[in-house]
Length: 246
Image 1 (cartoon, one colour):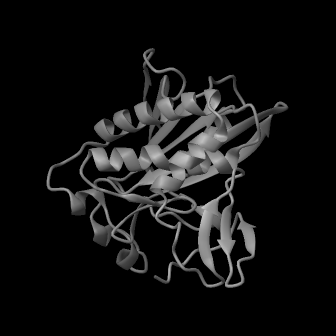
Image 2 (spheres, rainbow, N blue to C red):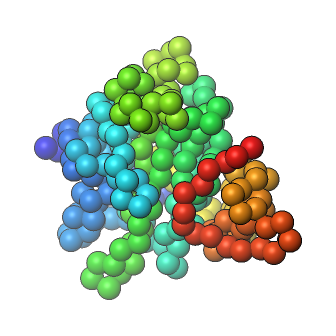
Protein backbone atom coordinates (compact mmCIF):
# COMPACT_ATOMS: atom_id res chain seq x y z
CA UNK A 1 0.00 0.00 0.00
CA UNK A 2 1.28 3.46 -0.90
CA UNK A 3 1.75 5.63 2.18
CA UNK A 4 2.73 8.94 0.61
CA UNK A 5 4.12 10.73 -2.42
CA UNK A 6 6.52 13.61 -1.79
CA UNK A 7 7.78 16.19 -4.30
CA UNK A 8 10.94 18.28 -3.97
CA UNK A 9 11.47 20.81 -6.78
CA UNK A 10 14.88 21.78 -5.40
CA UNK A 11 16.51 18.57 -6.63
CA UNK A 12 17.81 18.43 -10.18
CA UNK A 13 16.73 14.87 -11.08
CA UNK A 14 16.99 12.17 -8.43
CA UNK A 15 14.40 12.47 -5.67
CA UNK A 16 12.15 15.12 -7.17
CA UNK A 17 9.38 12.58 -6.56
CA UNK A 18 9.54 9.97 -3.77
CA UNK A 19 6.81 7.33 -3.54
CA UNK A 20 6.66 5.62 -0.13
CA UNK A 21 5.13 2.17 0.37
CA UNK A 22 4.67 0.25 3.60
CA UNK A 23 5.73 -3.09 2.05
CA UNK A 24 6.61 -4.38 -1.43
CA UNK A 25 8.07 -7.55 -2.86
CA UNK A 26 11.11 -5.57 -4.07
CA UNK A 27 11.63 -1.86 -4.61
CA UNK A 28 13.48 -2.63 -7.88
CA UNK A 29 10.54 -4.66 -9.15
CA UNK A 30 8.08 -1.96 -8.11
CA UNK A 31 10.16 0.63 -9.98
CA UNK A 32 10.09 -1.58 -13.09
CA UNK A 33 6.29 -1.84 -12.84
CA UNK A 34 6.03 1.94 -12.65
CA UNK A 35 7.95 2.20 -15.93
CA UNK A 36 4.80 0.95 -17.69
CA UNK A 37 3.31 4.37 -17.00
CA UNK A 38 4.84 7.74 -17.83
CA UNK A 39 7.04 8.40 -14.79
CA UNK A 40 9.75 11.01 -14.56
CA UNK A 41 13.44 10.22 -14.44
CA UNK A 42 14.77 10.20 -10.90
CA UNK A 43 11.57 8.89 -9.34
CA UNK A 44 12.34 7.07 -6.07
CA UNK A 45 10.50 4.08 -4.63
CA UNK A 46 11.04 3.56 -0.91
CA UNK A 47 9.53 0.86 1.30
CA UNK A 48 9.52 0.08 5.00
CA UNK A 49 9.88 -3.64 4.23
CA UNK A 50 10.63 -5.94 1.31
CA UNK A 51 9.17 -9.43 1.12
CA UNK A 52 11.65 -10.53 -1.56
CA UNK A 53 14.58 -8.12 -1.55
CA UNK A 54 17.41 -9.14 -3.88
CA UNK A 55 21.14 -8.69 -4.12
CA UNK A 56 23.50 -9.72 -6.92
CA UNK A 57 23.10 -13.13 -8.57
CA UNK A 58 19.54 -13.32 -7.24
CA UNK A 59 20.68 -13.67 -3.64
CA UNK A 60 18.12 -12.70 -1.01
CA UNK A 61 18.58 -9.39 0.78
CA UNK A 62 17.16 -9.51 4.31
CA UNK A 63 14.79 -6.58 4.69
CA UNK A 64 13.48 -6.37 8.27
CA UNK A 65 11.49 -3.41 9.50
CA UNK A 66 13.80 -0.52 10.37
CA UNK A 67 16.15 -0.75 7.40
CA UNK A 68 16.20 1.61 4.44
CA UNK A 69 15.13 0.10 1.11
CA UNK A 70 14.91 2.34 -1.95
CA UNK A 71 15.21 2.22 -5.74
CA UNK A 72 15.35 5.00 -8.28
CA UNK A 73 14.88 5.30 -12.03
CA UNK A 74 17.57 6.77 -14.28
CA UNK A 75 17.73 7.26 -18.06
CA UNK A 76 21.45 7.54 -18.86
CA UNK A 77 22.60 8.37 -22.38
CA UNK A 78 24.61 5.14 -22.58
CA UNK A 79 24.07 1.59 -21.31
CA UNK A 80 25.92 2.17 -18.05
CA UNK A 81 23.98 0.11 -15.53
CA UNK A 82 27.13 -1.55 -14.20
CA UNK A 83 29.17 1.66 -13.95
CA UNK A 84 26.31 3.58 -12.35
CA UNK A 85 25.96 0.83 -9.77
CA UNK A 86 29.60 1.37 -8.86
CA UNK A 87 29.39 5.16 -8.74
CA UNK A 88 26.26 5.24 -6.57
CA UNK A 89 28.33 3.53 -3.89
CA UNK A 90 30.14 6.81 -3.31
CA UNK A 91 27.11 8.81 -2.09
CA UNK A 92 26.03 5.81 0.00
CA UNK A 93 29.41 5.82 1.76
CA UNK A 94 29.30 9.61 2.10
CA UNK A 95 25.90 9.39 3.81
CA UNK A 96 27.11 6.69 6.20
CA UNK A 97 30.13 8.79 7.11
CA UNK A 98 27.94 11.86 7.58
CA UNK A 99 25.93 9.97 10.18
CA UNK A 100 28.93 8.58 12.01
CA UNK A 101 30.03 5.34 10.32
CA UNK A 102 33.34 5.66 8.47
CA UNK A 103 32.50 3.07 5.82
CA UNK A 104 34.38 2.15 2.67
CA UNK A 105 33.53 0.57 -0.67
CA UNK A 106 34.07 -3.12 -1.36
CA UNK A 107 33.97 -3.84 -5.09
CA UNK A 108 31.53 -4.03 -6.71
CA UNK A 109 28.44 -3.11 -4.71
CA UNK A 110 28.94 -3.19 -0.94
CA UNK A 111 29.53 -0.55 1.69
CA UNK A 112 31.50 -2.04 4.59
CA UNK A 113 32.60 -0.97 8.03
CA UNK A 114 35.43 -2.92 9.68
CA UNK A 115 34.93 -5.65 7.06
CA UNK A 116 31.23 -5.95 7.91
CA UNK A 117 28.60 -5.20 5.28
CA UNK A 118 26.29 -2.31 6.13
CA UNK A 119 24.77 -1.50 2.72
CA UNK A 120 24.39 -3.04 -0.74
CA UNK A 121 23.54 -1.77 -4.21
CA UNK A 122 21.85 -3.56 -7.11
CA UNK A 123 21.72 -1.85 -10.52
CA UNK A 124 19.75 -3.28 -13.45
CA UNK A 125 19.44 -2.08 -17.04
CA UNK A 126 15.97 -2.50 -18.56
CA UNK A 127 14.18 -1.42 -21.74
CA UNK A 128 10.63 -0.12 -21.69
CA UNK A 129 9.00 1.19 -24.87
CA UNK A 130 12.42 1.18 -26.61
CA UNK A 131 13.89 3.46 -23.93
CA UNK A 132 16.85 2.32 -21.84
CA UNK A 133 16.50 2.75 -18.08
CA UNK A 134 18.71 1.91 -15.14
CA UNK A 135 17.05 0.88 -11.89
CA UNK A 136 19.37 1.30 -8.91
CA UNK A 137 18.31 -0.32 -5.66
CA UNK A 138 19.90 0.44 -2.31
CA UNK A 139 19.54 -1.42 0.97
CA UNK A 140 21.04 0.11 4.11
CA UNK A 141 21.04 -1.50 7.53
CA UNK A 142 20.01 1.64 9.37
CA UNK A 143 17.71 1.11 12.38
CA UNK A 144 18.02 -2.67 12.43
CA UNK A 145 19.00 -4.86 15.36
CA UNK A 146 21.74 -7.23 14.23
CA UNK A 147 19.83 -10.23 15.60
CA UNK A 148 16.98 -9.45 13.18
CA UNK A 149 19.23 -10.42 10.28
CA UNK A 150 19.58 -14.10 9.25
CA UNK A 151 22.03 -16.02 11.48
CA UNK A 152 24.35 -16.77 8.57
CA UNK A 153 24.58 -13.05 7.76
CA UNK A 154 25.18 -11.67 11.26
CA UNK A 155 28.95 -12.42 11.54
CA UNK A 156 29.62 -10.46 8.33
CA UNK A 157 27.15 -7.61 8.78
CA UNK A 158 26.59 -4.54 10.89
CA UNK A 159 24.02 -1.75 11.21
CA UNK A 160 23.96 1.98 11.73
CA UNK A 161 22.03 1.41 14.96
CA UNK A 162 24.79 -0.87 16.27
CA UNK A 163 27.65 1.49 15.42
CA UNK A 164 26.16 4.92 16.25
CA UNK A 165 24.83 5.95 19.65
CA UNK A 166 22.47 8.63 18.32
CA UNK A 167 19.21 7.62 16.61
CA UNK A 168 19.12 8.48 12.89
CA UNK A 169 15.66 8.50 11.32
CA UNK A 170 15.37 6.80 7.94
CA UNK A 171 13.70 9.91 6.54
CA UNK A 172 16.70 12.02 7.54
CA UNK A 173 19.19 9.51 6.14
CA UNK A 174 17.26 9.18 2.86
CA UNK A 175 16.97 12.95 2.41
CA UNK A 176 20.74 13.38 2.79
CA UNK A 177 21.45 10.37 0.57
CA UNK A 178 19.19 11.56 -2.25
CA UNK A 179 20.87 14.97 -2.25
CA UNK A 180 24.25 13.24 -2.67
CA UNK A 181 22.98 10.90 -5.40
CA UNK A 182 21.37 13.82 -7.23
CA UNK A 183 24.70 15.67 -7.22
CA UNK A 184 26.59 12.53 -8.34
CA UNK A 185 24.17 11.90 -11.22
CA UNK A 186 24.52 15.51 -12.36
CA UNK A 187 28.31 15.02 -12.41
CA UNK A 188 27.86 11.74 -14.28
CA UNK A 189 25.93 13.48 -17.05
CA UNK A 190 28.46 16.31 -17.37
CA UNK A 191 31.83 14.71 -16.55
CA UNK A 192 34.02 12.17 -18.30
CA UNK A 193 33.51 8.76 -16.77
CA UNK A 194 37.27 8.38 -16.18
CA UNK A 195 37.23 11.21 -13.65
CA UNK A 196 34.36 9.70 -11.69
CA UNK A 197 35.99 6.28 -11.64
CA UNK A 198 39.15 7.92 -10.31
CA UNK A 199 37.09 9.15 -7.35
CA UNK A 200 35.67 5.64 -6.94
CA UNK A 201 39.13 4.09 -6.88
CA UNK A 202 40.09 6.41 -4.04
CA UNK A 203 37.29 5.02 -1.87
CA UNK A 204 37.46 1.35 -2.93
CA UNK A 205 39.01 -0.77 -0.19
CA UNK A 206 39.42 -3.69 -2.62
CA UNK A 207 42.23 -2.06 -4.62
CA UNK A 208 45.58 -3.46 -3.53
CA UNK A 209 44.11 -6.50 -1.79
CA UNK A 210 45.41 -9.96 -2.66
CA UNK A 211 42.98 -12.24 -4.45
CA UNK A 212 42.66 -15.96 -5.00
CA UNK A 213 44.08 -15.58 -8.52
CA UNK A 214 46.10 -12.41 -8.03
CA UNK A 215 45.89 -8.85 -6.79
CA UNK A 216 43.07 -6.38 -7.31
CA UNK A 217 44.92 -3.85 -9.45
CA UNK A 218 42.49 -1.20 -10.69
CA UNK A 219 38.97 -0.30 -11.87
CA UNK A 220 38.74 -0.09 -15.68
CA UNK A 221 36.77 2.65 -17.46
CA UNK A 222 34.02 0.10 -18.17
CA UNK A 223 33.66 -0.58 -14.44
CA UNK A 224 35.43 -3.95 -14.46
CA UNK A 225 37.77 -4.99 -11.68
CA UNK A 226 41.30 -5.46 -13.06
CA UNK A 227 43.17 -8.42 -11.55
CA UNK A 228 46.94 -8.82 -11.96
CA UNK A 229 48.30 -12.35 -11.53
CA UNK A 230 51.74 -13.36 -10.27
CA UNK A 231 53.22 -13.01 -13.76
CA UNK A 232 51.89 -9.47 -14.16
CA UNK A 233 49.17 -10.39 -16.66
CA UNK A 234 45.97 -8.38 -16.19
CA UNK A 235 42.39 -9.56 -16.65
CA UNK A 236 39.05 -7.77 -16.26
CA UNK A 237 36.20 -9.18 -14.19
CA UNK A 238 32.60 -7.98 -14.03
CA UNK A 239 31.10 -10.79 -11.97
CA UNK A 240 32.03 -13.26 -9.29
CA UNK A 241 32.18 -13.44 -5.52
CA UNK A 242 35.08 -11.54 -4.01
CA UNK A 243 36.80 -12.77 -0.89
CA UNK A 244 39.59 -10.59 0.48
CA UNK A 245 42.37 -12.75 1.84
CA UNK A 246 44.51 -10.01 3.37
